[in-house]
Amino acid sequence: MVHESTFEAAALSGSSAGSPANPLVRFAARADRVLGGAVEAVAALLVLAEICVLFAGVVSRYVFHAPLVWSDELASILFLWLSMLGAVVALRRGEHMRMTALVQKVHPQARAMLDAFAIAASVAFLALIIWPSIDYAHEESFIVTPALEVSNAWRAAAIPAGIGIMLAMALLRLLRVCSGRQIAVALLGMAALVGAFWLAAPLFATLGKFNLVIFFVVIVAATVLSGVPIAFSFALATFGYLALTTRTPLLVMVGRLDEGMSHLILLAVPLFIFLGALIEMTGMARAMIQFLASLLGHVRGGLSYVLIGAMYLVSGISGSKIADMAAIAPVLFPEMTKRGAKPGDLVALLSATGAQTETIPPSIVLITIGSVTGISIAALFTGGLLPAVVLGAALCVVVWWRYRREDLSAVRRHSRREIGRLLLVALPAVLLPFVIRAAVVEGVATATEVSTIGIVYSAIVGLVVYRQFDWKRIKPMLVDTASLSGAIIFIVGCATAMAWGLTQSGFSQDLARLMGALPGGAYGFLAVSIVAFIVLGSVLEGIPAIVLFGPLLFPIAKAAGVHEVHYAMVVIFAMGIGLFAPPFGVGYYGACAVSKVNPDEGIRHIWGYIAAMLIGLLIVAAFPWFSTGFLKS
Image: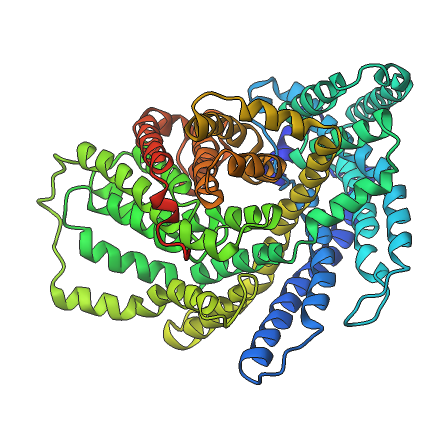
C-alpha cells in the first residue's frame, strides 16, 4: 500500500508542474480539499451510523426481546454507501492496494510516469463503467425493499455516485501530482490502448478461451506490475473481457460488483478495523503487553515470546494487521533494542507474526472467506485458533535458538505482587477476546454484530477503567476506518466480478478437472494449493487472492476430500507467508514502516522465521485435527 505523500513525491520528482504557483494545481488542490473533506465527513458518519444501527439491533433483540426487523436492511443500504465513499477516500489518499515493488526500482522520472499511468488506468475504468452503473441503479429502482418498503435505488445509487466522485477525485489527483506532459501522455496513451482493444474486437471473437490468457493473465499482470491499484486492474480486465469477447450487458458486471460488496457479513470489516484502532487508543493493548512482559521478560528471548503472544491476543480483537503491529511495536521494541536485539531481527519477527496470526478470529480474511464461500463464520473462528498456536510454536523454536545465549544480567525479574498488579490492570483488556467469542457462541450477536459489543465494551473500559480516551482522535479513526474498509470492500467487489467472468467462461470447470487429476489425492491438492497461494499472496495480497480463487477452489477441495475449514486454514497461512515475505510481500514493508526499520535490515533475519512457518504450515496441512478438532460435528 502506498500513501499519498509517497505517491505525490514520486510524481513530483519528475516534474515541476506540481508547484502551488500553478493556478490549475491550486484549483485542483482547493477542489480536492472541499470535495474530499465532505466525502470524508459523510463516510465517518456512516461508520458511526452502522455501529449505532447494529448495536441497537443487538440490544432490541437480546435485552428487550423485540427484534428490529429493519435494522439489517438499513445497515445493508448504509454499508454500500460506506463502501463506495470509503473507496473514494482511499483513492484520494492513495491507499488502494498496489504492488509497488517493481515501480520503486525504476528511475524517479519513469516512476512518476508509471504513477500517472496508474491514475489514468483508474480514470479509464471509471469513465467506462459509469453509464452501465447508472443503468443498473435505474433497473434497481423497480425493486421495493421488504422491511423499509423503499425503492432499492436508494441503495444501488451508491455505485454510480461513488464511481462519479472517484472519477472526479482521480482527475483532480492527476492535476495535483502530475505535469501537463505526464497527464497528456498518460491519458492519450490510455485512450489509444482502449481504442486499439475496441478495434480488435473482431479478432478476439475468433480466439476462444485464449482470451482468458490475454485479459486475465497478460492485462492483469501488466497493470498490477506497473502499479495500477489491484482493484482497478481486476476491473479493467473483466470489463474488457465482457465487453469485447461476450454479449453480456455491462450492467451485469455492475451487478456482480454490487453482489461482491453487499454481503452483510463484510460489514464486520469496518467495525473490527475501528475496534482495533479503539483498543490501541484506550491503552488496552499496552496493558496486555505489559502484563505478558512481566511474565516472560526475565527469560532468554522472553520479549520475543511476548511479541508472539501479544500478536496472538491483539489479532483476536483487531481487524487490521497494521493496527496490530502499531499497537505492539512501540511498546516492546525500545526495551528489546536496549537488551541488544537487532532491529532487523525485530522487524523480521514482527512480520512473521503477522502471517502466523492471520487465522485468529475475528480475522478479516476469515470473514471474507465466509462471505464468498458460504462457510460458517463461527466454524472458521473456532478452527483458526489452534493452527496459529502451531505456527507460533514453530516461531518460538527459532527464537529459543537465536537468543539461547542472551545476557540477562541487567534484567530485573518482576515479583509476584507486581505481576498480580499488572494482571489486574490488564484483566479488562484480556477479557475482550473472550467477551467477543462468548457473544457469538451464546447467540447474543452475529459475527457481524459482535464487533459493536466489542466497541462499546472498549469505549467503557477506556473511559472508566483506563481513563484514556482522546475524543479528538475519534473522527480521524472513523475516516481511516472508512478508507481502509473502502479499499478492501471495493477490491472484493472487483474480484467477485472477475471470478464471475472466469466462471462464465468455463474456466472453473477446466480448473476443477485439472486439479482433480493431480496425483496424491487430497494431499497433492493441498501441496499445489500451498505453492499457489504463497505466490498469489505475494503478488495480489491476501484478500484479492482469496476472493478471486476461493469460490473456484473450495468446491474442488471439498470434492477432493479436504474439509473446507481445514482448507481455509491452509490457504490462509500460505497466503500470509507470501504476503509477509520479501521481496514482494507488502505486509513485510508494512511491518518495516510501523517499526521505522529499513527493509534491508530485516531480510537477512526473516528467512529462519519463514522456514519455521513453512514447517508449521506443513504440520497443519498434514494433520487436519488442528483445524477441525474442536468443531461441533
